[in-house]
Structures are given as structure tokens and as C-alpha cells.
Length: 583
Ligand code: SIN
Image (cartoon, rainbow, N blue to C red; front, side, top):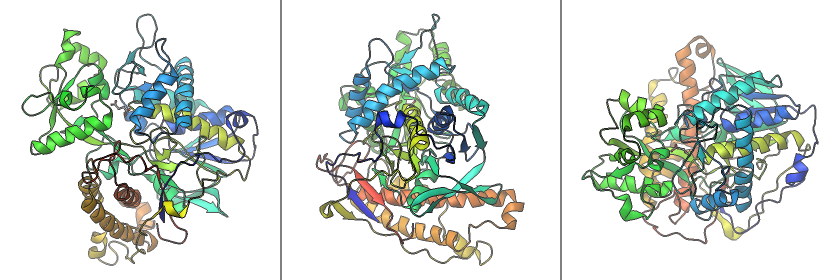
């Protein structure tokens, strides 16, 4: 495999389409299209395909609504208000991305994003509105305008997911397969040919001419995360194994404020947008010393500072104090219950009354800016394979995602991928730029899979040497976490390589293959899926660690204590698996 730092080449080079051309009808009625993932990107892709009159199969790992989208709180950033403009939104997005956003991708995001939000509002998504029916909006960090529309107070993702999945269920052109685990992609002759699924413990292959991966993120590789259990990098890992290019995996975003007790429940940035402040153990408001925007500095700045303050106070969490909101909302308890019903209920369930006392918060893994490298229509480097949403790297998030741009990206680029999948001619390929030798940085190849007998069949010792989830989480948090440095990253690359080899060996040698015992025994099925998820997390964690080791600078969400400065000569990092090597 190779890791390449991209120079100043233009990103596109795509053959056969520009915006206008792709919007034109070129429908292939016999094309089988499969979308994997049912968050905002997957639902948008499926609706876009169905909207052209074409059938589509939507495959999801759990029930239709379970996804990162469902758990999103703050909202969707959209320049739809009279004091705003998509250009202003684009400028904020670019600034947060620290020089690694693609301006064209961002322009599309902010222009088309405003259209998509208006469309979904008109189609019946229950965004919060005032008494006159006007959509309400909030301010979030690093936005120059209040432009974050929300639903159910702080339950935007849930409301959106429920409303839009109801539209999807009603659409006769969309065929839904739930509870199907994506094991791998089928690629024949260099072109996508379908997906290998595991359904009810049985292997099932689904033939497809186009596969759109919208399978979400990978927060579950870290012990502290806002992501639900389904976020195990399945889309990114299968694309990697199939040989697709991935980009910028060193840029993983940590949210500054998850509850530091319980299950690291997200405490939305919108809470700081309404006026909450961060305090250290002495009650000092430290963010004012760090950035003129204080708690509303970009997410990477606040997360890093929270982490540093926690380190300085022996690991004790920082405190989020909502009392400044009382100036405008004298009945603070009822304001909080109305504006942030989800967070209010959760904090109270843990015994906190946040209207009266600060709550303990800490950074937690939240969102991957890097992902499967795509063009502006979601095309990946494998013909017939598209990607959208968190598993994709479209170029809009750069080194640090602006708050509430993720649902927007799913809306815009999920739809674009869906339309391209219908209208691309067979053989349409996106030719990524060719790389010059001087840009190539060696990426160590993972070791050959070790032979490993089936757990329980050949003895517990072998099975025990395959890393479980806690071991993966510990390695990633300690060495590939909020603040990184050479020795830790180097150790992680070695450790993750060994662990991945064992996990690969376990798969290759049947330790995680299905068998009749798996089919008969529900706990064995859960165990099987967990092992495949762990292998996926190891796969992407390994590549992330290498990318982080090779990026000798600090930029956006990637912080190196040994390279504190930003180095503007380093651009994107791109990696792919060399043919014939293990994953
Ligand atoms: C939040 O509500 O703070 C999270 C929203 C996002 O990740 O953009």
C-alpha cells in the first residue's frame, strides 16, 4: 500500500460528466443499484435514485432508523435566512477546514444544501418553527451567522430520520433489507459487481452494477464516543479491502463536550451557542484565554483545550455551566427542558439538575473528516462504487468539520451519488490524478494473516490473542487520540498491524466464518458480527495511525505534540491497498 500526499493537482479529472451533464437523463433501466446505510446520506441517495423512476435496494445493518444521523442533536447548517448567503457559509466551512477543503465541493455543499433543506421542509420534515411558522435557527461554533435549523429542540437527527425513513418506506421503488451486515464488496474485472451480506447468520450475495456506500462512521474504535454501536467503519473497511483509495484518515474529529459520566452522551454545541461556558476545576473560564471566540471557537480548538485542561487537572472532567443563559431565560429549567429536551432528560436521569449546577463534560470521538476518496458525484476509484456521508471524503470537511455540516453533506452528496449512479454510463470511471514519485511516502504493509484456528475448536489461547473491542479502543485512545506524537503513533502502527494480521487470519482461517452453530445460537451470531466489526475497526485504525504518523504537522483535528506548527506544504494524504497484499 502507498500513502501519498497530494500536491496541487486539480481534483476532478472525472470522465463523462459535469454538473449539467449528470443531471441529464441517461437512465439505464436494467442497472441494479444497492445503497448500503440508512442515515441521511443513504436515505437521500435512495430517494434520489427512486425519484428518477429507477428501483433501488437499501441495505441497513440494523433497523432502518438506527444510524449516526438518528443521534445528531444540534441541527443542519443551511444558508436559508435573509441575513445569510451560501457564500458566507462556504467561507466559514473553508476557514474551519484549515486549507484542506475543496472549494468547489464546499460551494456545492452550501448552495445545494440550502435547496435540499427547503425541499425537505416543504416535503414535511418537522423542523422547529415559531408561532408564525418561520423556521427557528441556532448559532453554533465558528459560524458567522445563526443558520442551524433544528427539530424536536435537540433531536434533529431523530426527527429527520423518522420523517425521511417514513418517506422511504412508502416509496414503492425502494426495497429495504434490514439487519444485514455488509461483509465485503464483490468486484469483478475491476468493476463493482455486488455485495456480500450476512443476514440471519446466512451468507447472501446481492448482485449490483452500482453500490453506494453510505455506511457511516467509526466512533466505536475509541472508548469515549458519541457514536452508536453500529458505527464500526464497515463501509470504509470494505472499500479499503476492495482496493479503493481513501483520503485524509488522520483527521478524526473529537467533540468537545460529551457527558463525562454514563455513556458519553453528546451535549450539543448548540448549548454553547445559547451561551453555556466551560470551567476548569477552579471555576476559571479558560477558553477566553485561548481564542477570542472562547467557547464558540472551532470544534478542534475547544476539544483540544478541554483535553489539555483535563490532563492538567489529573483527568478530572471540565464543567459546562449553562447559568449565563438565565439572563435571557429567567425560568432556566423550563427553557432547558423545551430547547434541549433530550439532553435535559439524560442529565436528569444521571442525577444532575443542570439548571442549578455545572455538568461534567469531556472530549469524545465524534466524526471522521477523512474517508473513501470521491469526486463531486460520490464516484470512488473503483468503477461502479460510490460513497457518501461520513464514510466518504468528498472534500467538504477538510481538516476539521464545521458544526452541523454533516447532515448537510449527507443530504447533498447522498443525492448526487444517487443521481450519478443512475445516469453514469457503464464504464464511467473517475481517474484520480497520477502520482509523482516524489510524493509517495511508503506505507508499511500489514503482515500476512496469521493462521488461527476457530475459537473454541482449537483452544482458547488462540482465540484470546485476537484483540477484543476494549483493547482496540485503548490503543486508539492512547496513541491515535486527541493529541499524538511520533513514538506513540509508531508503537500503534506496529501493534495495530499485528492485531490486524491476527484478525485477518481469524477470518481467512474460518475463526469468524459462519457455521451451523452460529445460525442456531443468537449469541454466537452477535459474537461473529462483533469480530467482523473489530476487524473493520482495526483495518481503518491501522491506516489512520499510519496517516497520522506521516503527517508531521498540527492542523485542524490532527494535533502532534512533536510538530506543533502547521506546515502548509503538506496537502491531502491518500492511501490504498496494494493489489495482492493482505488488508
Ligand atoms: C452537536 O450538536 O454538537 C453536534 C452536531 C455536529 O456534529 O455537527
